[in-house]
Structures are given as structure tokens and as C-alpha cells.
Length: 203
Image (cartoon, rainbow, N blue to C red; front, side):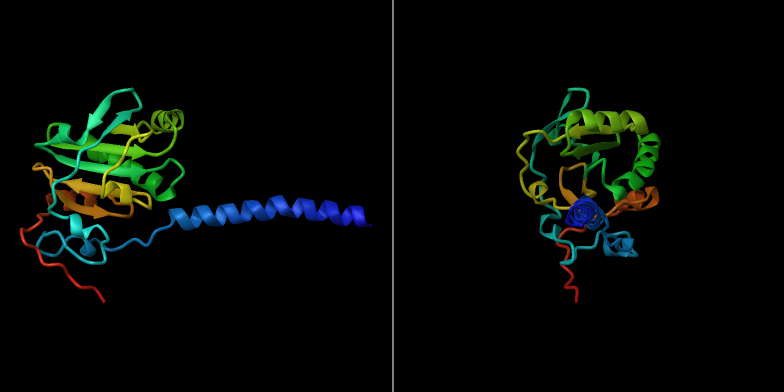
């Protein structure tokens, strides 16, 4: 009798651990999808709001760092001066990131490298990311973080996906912490960050 009880309990333990793990993944990957009006106003200007934890960086010169892509090529943020740049932090296991992939692929198809640079960075190992990129036929630059030191505000990323929109002058225009559609990305790319924009105090 005692033996049966122990066996039953031993069976339940892995199930409990798996349930907790799944719940943790769901918590990490599920984000509140904010309306685009939280990022771009009706006049096509970037919204500077305290709700966005990165707002203090808007209009600031982007700090430089270098990462290696899945083909072994190095990319520095400074390499992209003179064109719009999206720096995306993501993961292959992140559901919102996966949902965003088709929109990013189409964005790359519609915009030349001369006008728009896309740099997607994962903290996972190179083989995992490379296999995913091949399977999903990703057509934009995919890099892994490796041992790269990230300066602020990139070092402050705590959720995936997080997208940094950087203008041709190398200034951070806005940061979005959620998955985006193609239409939303294009709206942000076309939006303007006004000089001396006032920060909105959200309730």
C-alpha cells in the first residue's frame, strides 16, 4: 500500500513541475498589447510617455555595440548610420516573437537594405537560432548576443520582443515592448519625434 502511494506521488511530481514550467513560459511570453496610439499620435508624431520605461532615451544618440550574425559576420550599430534601423530583441521560444516573424519578413521584402536595416538579436545559442531562421526562411539579419557587452538602454531589456526604432541620424526614436504588425511597424517608421517633446504623465 505504501509503495503504491509513493509511486503515485512520484508520478505527480514531474507533472506538477511541467505545469509550473508551462505557466512560467506563458507568463513570460504573454504581454499586454498596447494600442498603437500609445506610441504614435493622430498627427503622426512619436508619443513620449512615462508609461514607456525607455522614454528618457528618446532623441538620444544610440550607443554603439557589435554582435555576430548566424553566418559569422559582425555588425555594429554605427554601421547603419544614414538609414532607419530596427534593433529587435527576441527568442525562438517566445510566442509573440513568432507571431511577429511573417510581418518582419514582409517588411524586409518591401524595403531595401539601403533604406532600412533590421537587426534581430537573440540570447540563445547560435545553432538554435540558425536552425529556426532556416526553417522559417528569415530574410533579415539575425545575430546572437554571445558574450557581447550591451550598453544601456539595450542592457535594460527584460521582455521579448522589444524593438528599438533608430532614425538615420542615429537617434533612438521609440522603443516598443510587444509584437507588431507590418502596418504598425510602417506607421512607427514614418512617425516623427519632435524636438523638445514633452513627456506625458499617464495616470
